[in-house]
Image (tube, helix red, strand yellow):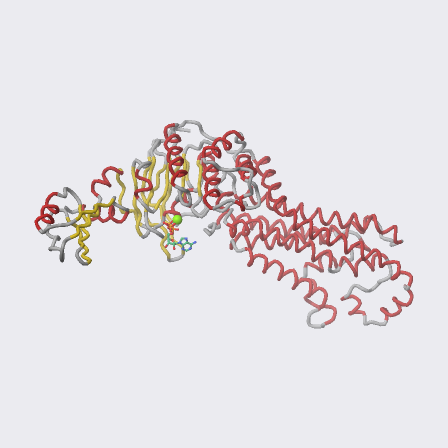
Length: 279
Length: 298
Ligand SMILES: Nc1ncnc2c1ncn2[C@@H]1O[C@H](COP(=O)(O)OP(=O)(O)OP(=O)(O)O)[C@@H](O)[C@H]1O
Ligand SMILES: [Mg+2]
């Protein structure tokens, strides 16, 4: 009998190796989403001067709309820098792309490995499911933060060229709140994937809830019966206080982060209990 | 750690998928340094058992230990001692063989590249190709290398030779023997006795989720019903009465007999009836099993 007892590897290098491996696996899709968002940002910046120069006419036109409609489309102050960025980027485009990155990464994290059948190999290695979960969360988080950072950089660098006025801190606040929003829906998706092992179910629930939350937040001002429910939308939590004008809403940021952490803990527990499906 | 006197110990291990039985009440010991063949037809519960040992699925009841480590409570430490080849092997397709093995090695805390390069060379596996571009058999070789490369104390191999050509199967058998000589234990599953009988010291046969037989390969072969085909000039005589004959199938002028024990009386009877030709076959799994069940009360 070989008496050599093989040791369990240390956590940090193991988690790092799996995080890097996962990032490499998701590199192309992350890069694609990121590039798309950056290009849209550049395009939007490029049209800003014409919006600003026609500011009186444009604002007068928008001002005729009912308040609820303006709020719904984020058009309250369309021709100001913050109002323009809010309407064109932060009310829909940036959050939805970041959510897409977070939810696809989360669905691939455990359920995707399971459906591809690679979970058998990965989980036969001396690594706990908690560590696997940690590495997957790190990789997904890094992907979201990288794209969010690239978007921030694009706008921060590009704004002065087109005379778009936005406080650096407020821009960062907008990016931070949308990033937290994306991480929240990523955590929801991860939980469903860890508990069911089914990638499409996880993605469907995560993306479905995100779209419902988006629509609820956007349409609530238009319908009386929806209005009381607006506060239930995580989009409202993240963007209701207009971070591009007012900076970070610490309470809401804490709420999103706290709920995400709770969801991740439940996901880790569910994953430990889950029977990995054979192919 | 105390040196346990069992490499693998399963006690009443049971897995139900809902109401579907995977394996029930499996009690089994595998000794250190042994090659144990875990045999059974499709759906018998082999993969279910193996995936419980690795902690991929959780037992409904019962317990198990590998080298004294509990399969549920000590799963991570247990897996450090084990090399596993999945039955439905799936690898990270976009990686090259060497990148995958390097990844596996790092997740195991570092395995020198020479370890997997030497194994790959033995198996005639090209590590520079992307896994998705490899043939099924070559992909299986990557799985074999991944299971052996860290010199584990216990190898758990689920149908290891599936997809391997005969030459590579031979090399694989040599690898198993060397590994055992170096002190490891091997637990491998298969559908067919012939595939494991050269390697295995003992075999267990599972049928429909229950362990039917555990015995040495030699005893099993001895007690196995051998299949003998007898061609007669016309309709065969009634052979069921001959000593040791378990079963007879008649087709035209050919009688197929399953026989345990000496063949003398059967052959004498056949000769008396003018037998024209005789074919014998190596016992396969069902034959072995048949011989066992019926041999029990004789
Ligand atoms: N995830 C699952 N859900 C439900 N039933 C399952 C599941 N996995 C296996 N089973 C059932 O459990 C039984 C044992 O299956 P198992 O895969 O362990 O058999 P096996 O001996 O490995 O068969 P094979 O030789 O075909 O690989 C079968 O009846 C199978 O249908
Ligand atoms: Mg199987």
